[in-house]
Length: 226
Image (cartoon, rainbow, N blue to C red; front, side):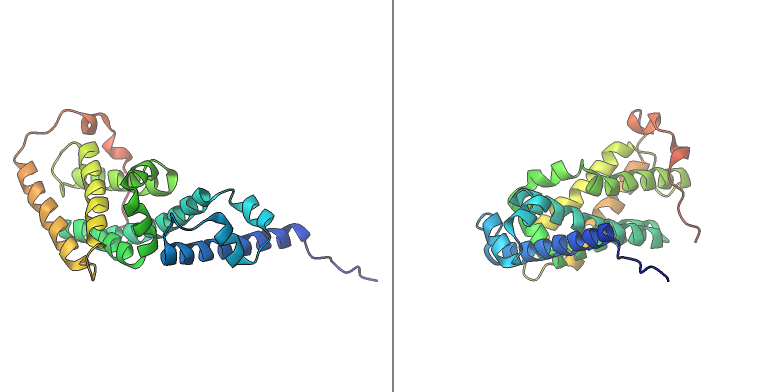
């Protein structure tokens, strides 16, 4: 007689935790959108989830942990969009405008996260050092190195250029979402002209001595063939 296989209780438990986590994050996002991060409490989130308080606190010990997870989840989705836009680029203008448009469009769509971050811009700068957001900055640095090697971008200090392009994305997005409706086209056009014009001036400058010269350009991540 064949013995019946019993469901794997470990897998069942893992699936349940994933569902509970998604429920908590969905409820928190909605609550933050309705009454704001400051007004919402962990107790409010627990009541709306209908989950035991101990279960919620085991997954997220406090409101800040939920906020951080929401931001990191958004960052992963944003990174994928920006990466895809840069990979599709067939010109320097596309290389600049495509990722910025993806970034600003995401900012306009994910208003909850950006409204939260707008209340504390220093949080963005701290999160840029974390893996979820920091990976996007690292990829930008690598792609700029590759663009310099190809001759698409003038030989400049890549550390400075990466910081400038990442910083402009955040600061312009924070201003853009304050407008009704958010001006994605205007923001994209502005930063594209800003950097394309800057590249022209940088081509007239001598090759910098600094961080860019110390990095191994050949180590840049290869871009897909077109």
